[in-house]
Amino acid sequence: MICSLCYMLATIKLNGILNAGQELSEKQRLSIKWKKILFAVSILSTVGLLVFFAKHRFYCHDLAFSWFAFFEYLIAIANMLFHFTIIWDFPSQFMMIVQGPRENLAQYLSNRPKVD
Image (cartoon, rainbow, N blue to C red):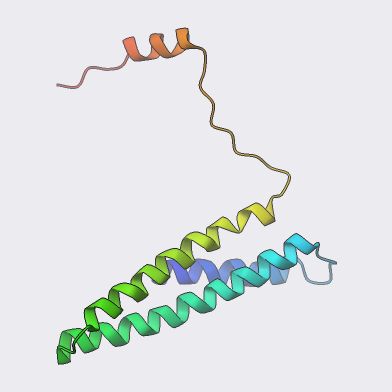
């Protein structure tokens, strides 16, 4: 969790440093805006997570663990969405998952190392 927050902060700061004095495109501004929002959501969710962990662990409050889990999910969702903003950072790039010709696939499968 700490590494994730540090990565988010470093990405936001590096964007600011590397793009200083440059005119940003609409997609770049949108990306930076959402990165900042998702970083704030992660920070606030981390605080909530820690508070409800303490309430669950030390005071056995009702629903404390449920709220802890809720904030844990928020952190995970914010982290995934933060990484999803890459589509605005590299708008002209594509990721393709392709399958090669069937004969190459059959050859690969027949030559796999045997695991005992």
